[in-house]
Length: 140
Image 1: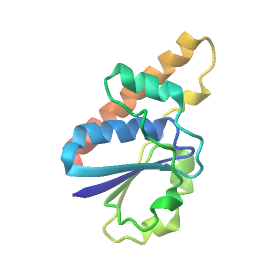
Image 2: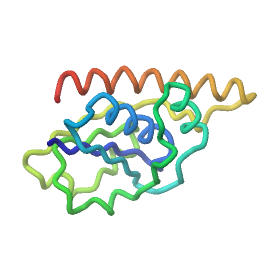
Image 3: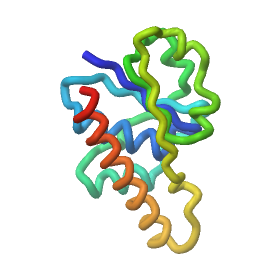
Image 4: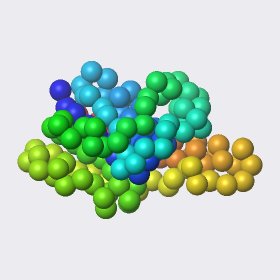
C-alpha cells in the first residue's frame, strides 16, 4: 500500500482538502497523511466546503511534518510554494520517494463578504479535486 504525504504551510486548508480527495479517490490503495511546516488548525471553511462535496474532513487534525519523520513515504505532494521550498531534508533521504509540487492559491487569504470567501474556497477545492483525481489515476 502506497503512503502519500500532502504538505502545506499550516496544514489548515489546501493540504486538508487534498488529503480528503486523495483518500476518497485512492480508497484502500493508499494511506494518506497531511501535515504542515507549521500547524494552524483545520480551517472551518475547508471543512464546510468539503462537506458540500460529501467528503468529511471534520475529524482531521492539523499536524506538523516532524510527526511523520519515521514514515517512509512513496509520494510527497507540496501544495504551496512555501512548503516546497522548506520541505524537510529527511523526506529526501528516502530513495523511493517521489516528490510532486503544485502551488494552489490559498483560500484562507480571500477577502470580502462570506459569500466571496466561500466562492474562493470552492474554486480552490475544484482545482485540488481535479489534481487529486488525476494523481490517483496516474500514480496509483
